[in-house]
Image (cartoon, rainbow, N blue to C red; front, side, top):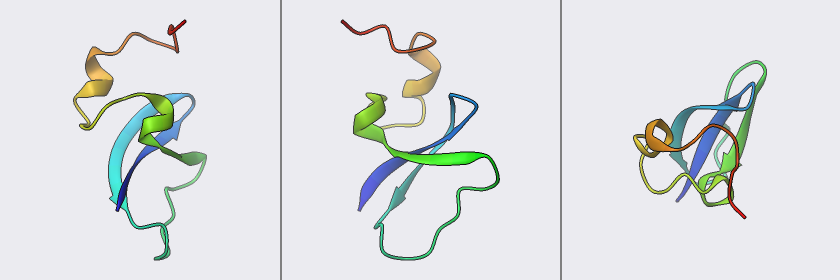
Length: 57
């Protein structure tokens, strides 16, 4: 299992655990991105404390 962020309009709406093999649709206009790629950490609460946009150097 890996953590994925459900992203809508560049905003993390949810974080899920998904094995990548079973069918899953994040919904209309949504994208799944592996959470490590977004650097949002291990929990959904991480999105609330992160600055808007990617400000890493």
